[in-house]
Amino acid sequence: MSFKTVNTDRTYSYRARAEDGEVVTGTVSGSTPDDIAAILRADGLVPTAIRNAGAALPDFDADEIRRGEAARRIRRDDVAVFCQQLGVMLDTGVPLPEALEASRVQCRRKEFAHLVGEIHIDVCGGTPLSRSMARWPKVFPPIVVSLVRASEASGTMALMLGRVGEYLVREERTRKQVKGAATYPAFMLGSAVLITAFMLVVILPKFSAIYERKGAELPGATKVMMALGDAIRNGWPIWLPAIAAIGFGFFLWRRSNAGRRIIDWCKLNAPIVGRLTVTLYLARASRTMSTLLAGGVGLIDVIRICRGVTDNVVFDRMWQDMEARVRDGKELTGAVTDSKWIPAGVGAMMSSGERSGQLPEVMEKIATRCDDELEAGIKQATSMIEPMLIVFMGLLVGAVAMALLLPIFKMSSVVAG
Image (spheres, rainbow, N blue to C red):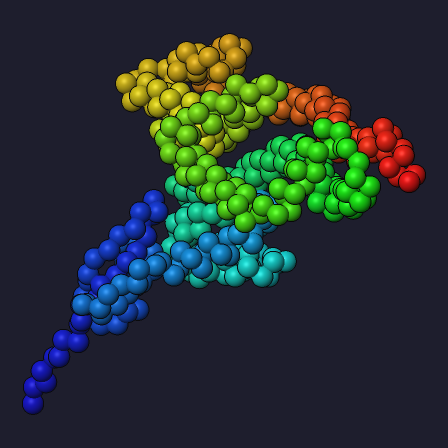
């Protein structure tokens, strides 16, 4: 008796994400959606949606939305600790799957524990660690993925994860310094605006009622403040939509090429802030380049990642010139020495390091020097801005207070009568 084999394969449509983050769609044959997912993973793709052929794929990427929501609740400190712990366990001989499971158990945040659990499942299924990390671009920046990928090829994952942890710790320290320096002026300005608005909207009307009952002729400054308070209190149906429209228009303009060029130019040329911005960019780029070069990442990939950490169209031209020089077989530091934003001493140090083959070590020294300059610059800027803000608050609040009290001082008979 002979048996006839029945082919149960069906055609499925899929949407997947490549290793570089690009979205890929197509069709493939298989028995079940799980088989399709296995085929896609074997081809280096991460499936995000699988449907029967002819059925419409969803307009949204549910997997991407889920990853984005989780990433917003994960701090960079958690990622740094995870990389350092993983590197220590690998260095002591713990296998990668066991190290991932131990890291998952030790995670204090459930969102990050879930993420590490998914990475553990991917690794146990044969997916390289770098490819699994690349699924979470908002958690693991490109420098982390590139270093882990290079360590997988060289067999130095434990050492590389330690470097990744140190890099993330230093970057987080720098970010907190900049954020802390910007928080104080923002708080002072916000407080001044709120106090002034409260006096104009709440306090001033009580005084104006007294003045009106007495029929007194008010000083010009008081009339101006009263008119401003009335506009804020009664004109919100006009000025609130106007502010929203202006804000939305500024948001769209800022995303345009012309708007971004102007804003990025202002960042580099603004008094006080401009010098700090250049130093911040140099510190980030130098530290990133040093870490990547020491990890064995290709020079073209190093330049592209460094271009991302500066995020400024003015600096983009320097990185584009640097990449073109490398492709033509020239020295990459030529683009640095030609840029007016890079100090001559930094360009000379990079050129010397490139000729001597010690560019990673030189870039690390440059990063350390820029960190010290940034810290000193932030302290100096704060010490300069603080008295200016105090004077501004005094003038603003004092002007409103004088507008309130000036009629009393000038026409004491109004209050006494």
